[in-house]
Length: 329
Image (cartoon, rainbow, N blue to C red; front, top):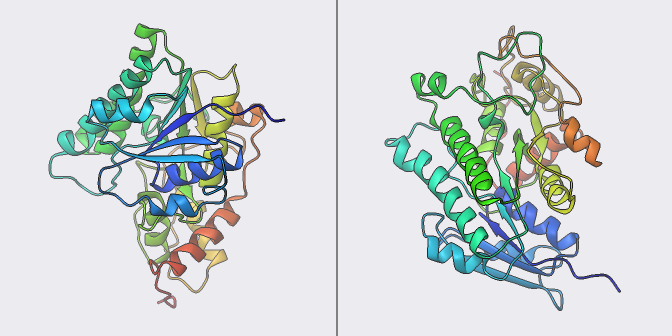
């Protein structure tokens, strides 16, 4: 008889990554999952995931804004693992970036960690982002980006790029908190996540591909290292949680390469869409690398080909009405 898996909490459980994570946990044999969601948001799709209604499975939804410590404490209580996925994410300009992005990311993360500390949680897996690693203009030339890179906060602030600031500060504060309290916190840094949308709305990372297919000329200079299938991110999160030796930071991308190369690949796969073909480097000086996520590969993670991720995303965007087909101009 299989040993029952630990009870776990997932914050942001009804968002793109969170939903895939809940699905992966169910597939991996986790039977008690506390799904923490933003109050009033829709979590009904979680109960349509494979295994969600199986006998013995307790998938419980908790309304918990990350700024509401008491609500978080209730969501985390009785679990021994926390996957902190919830974070405000927008690539659009905000009216008050400190209030809308930075404070919820930093204070929300600290609230989750304090709730986890009080519940004696064994390990917290923090979903950071490549936005906590780049942009970093001071990174040595001719060196492949790795987990030792941190985003240059002054550079981002001077260019009004607040999402990388929020993700970087949240991770740095989480690291300090973990050291102070002797907690086991491991961070994962997904690149641009693609794949089937299991949630009803459109998320920011899939919107990057949607906009590219509709002719956007945005080079993604500040938000790009590569792409990854969201199911690989979810698998990596569970792998990191279950591997006792895992520690520190884990870059999660199927290679590092220019956004121009990605656009070229998308254009070849979907010639019926007006994909802009970029000339030259979209990420000046970025060194390409096929096995950039060596730390995860060494744990046994096998990445899905990016072409498959793109195809599945496009099929999903069409099915949900987020993509209208156009002939090239």
